[in-house]
Amino acid sequence: VVWLFIAWVGTPAEALPMLAAIPMMLAIVSFQFGADLAYDTLPLRRATVMISHYLTALALIVVFTVIGTGLSVLIARLRGQPIDGSLPSLTGLLLAGVVFALAVLLPLALRFGTQVGMLVFVGILLGALFGVRGLIGLAPDLAPPVIEAAADVAPWMMIAAALLAYAASLLISIRIYAAQDH
Image (cartoon, rainbow, N blue to C red):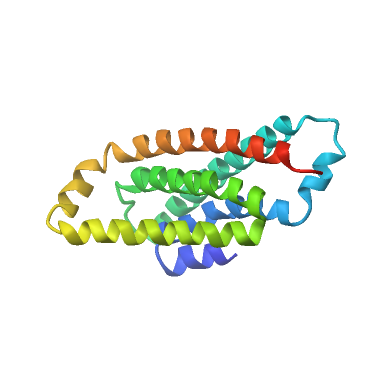
């Protein structure tokens, strides 16, 4: 409901990140509410549990992003707004960003708990943002041409990099989860 309100009042592109973040938060919060205890009752290896958790989260992120993009296009047409040609690039970058964030956040939540893992993640995110801002401050004239030149290639490269990070995160999470005493 909140997503539809933001999409209708603002622009549909402003509402996409919120919708794509829903499955990411579900994947993290499920450990806070004892999903690992439910997993322990199943006759599954710990690696199988982590693989299924990661695949489910990835599938939900893709489904929510596709649904959100479709709804964004529908709302834009209902409002009589033109569809921006950068919507596929925006969707790809959003998908890559959410997958990469989850790749960093899941092992942190497994290792330190959900709340501490989120705080560590926010610290990493703020450090990265200040780092990028510092780089832009060093060469402000280069930022717009670099961003414009990378707009066509960047979403696919970012998705590939995010999937690689997600696979590495899965391997790390398997080790963390297997070492935990359940």
